[in-house]
Image (cartoon, rainbow, N blue to C red; front, side, top):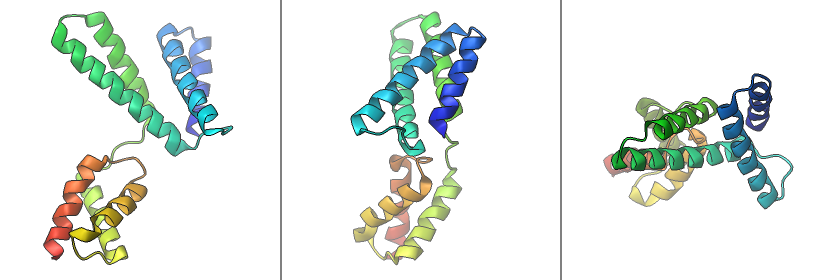
Length: 151
């Protein structure tokens, strides 16, 4: 499980005295623990962990972009880049456009979708099959194009 991998990396960072990594992984572990408590679960599923990591990555990326526009704070930008790269190490690699197209075509065929009215059903099934490896904003235009061509 992803949560256990993060914990093992945290312990390794503690032993090797990597202060920045320990601080960041400690923060991530706290986020995961808070979510587990909120959901009244002992352990989170990998999909839930990935969701939390993606949200954190998005926050860090937005903060990085905001700081980059305000002026030279190279030390903070370096820290943010390091934290983003740590998060990316735990996230699954994103699907290529070709892989998304294949999934969309398979789902359309599987569901027997025939028009744009079926877009919601197709989107839900594609997102489930993609398993968090593709963003809805990237999937939607492909689904729309494929369903429009069927009409």
